[in-house]
Length: 366
Ligand code: NAD
Image 1 (tube, protein in one colour):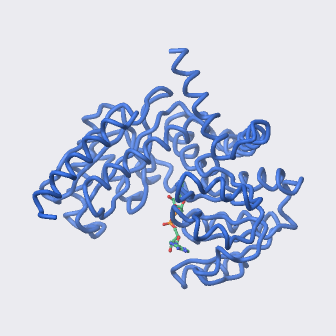
Image 2 (cartoon, rainbow, N blue to C red):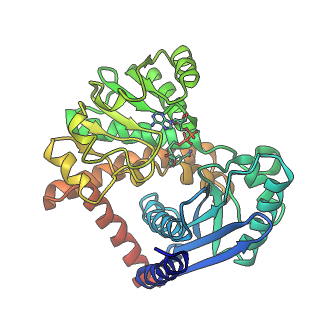
Image 3 (cartoon, protein in one colour):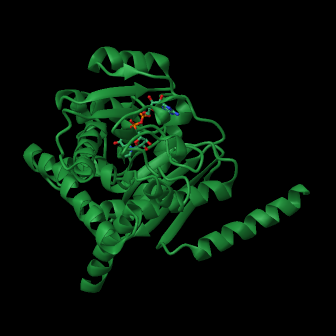
């Protein structure tokens, strides 16, 4: 196809994607200095300002970046609702030609200008970290706008939410084990953790403290080895973790890990982990159910990050309240499992029902 034709097709795709999206608004800016497209998708402000992270990534096309922002923003709406937070769902994407070196002038300029864009949205969108953005980026954005969570403690923030996310996942695993094995206690359980990053590492510590046996894999072998030394987890190869015999498989690396290719190889009774968008397609929850594997929906299990950020930085909660709200993930998941059993639907469908009902109730009460 000639370049001009592909540009026309791509423009039509973008227009129809925007038309079909049920969210509230999409804000796009082209950052000429960085040759980057900046996209902020606001899916819903029914429960409060749209809150969600900023993902920096090299996308194959503008249409891919737009689709990612809109899909992730919609998922954030349900995540906030399930966490009972006064926030709606939003997400931002920085579609860059290459990931800039952290700390360099190019990097700083991009995040300063992006901070101005968040400021211009006047608090409708509140940002936080995501893939390729972290505390350092949030500190730069915070120089331009107060509508940012996850700054360093030195800049008045609560830092990396990975510890809170891990604690929420830990409670999610307990709830799923209570349902699958009749007991939330993890002392007799084996948990396979995929990815020993910020969340996976803290999760391994919590599991060790609860007496569980743990297995870990990371594409970075040094990271896996360090996690083994620090937590006593057994290391397996990154290509082996999905098929490792265990009670619980905890995806804590990337999305799309549960697919038609991987699900037949799982040797677990429960899937409960931190990664966003674990199901590769809408059919994969059925595939898991057909294999008798209990799936704990990702956005219910991994809401600890937003609970940590909002609780500490905007809602004025003390540590005990944040801890109690993280533990409440256990009850929320039990509600999801009950509904799935009662209605004969998958746990992913049940989570969507509970979240949508909460949002509709809030909209009706407006
Ligand atoms: P991270 O980048 O700190 O860690 C991810 C780890 O996974 C890295 O060590 C990486 O080397 C490893 N990895 C990548 N691909 C892998 C593979 N195929 N097999 C094995 N290991 C692999 O990320 P994180 O903050 O720990 O987050 C983990 C996941 O949880 C991500 O999907 C993230 O979107 C999601 N999540 C994180 C938070 C949070 O608070 N950090 C909140 C909600 C959801």
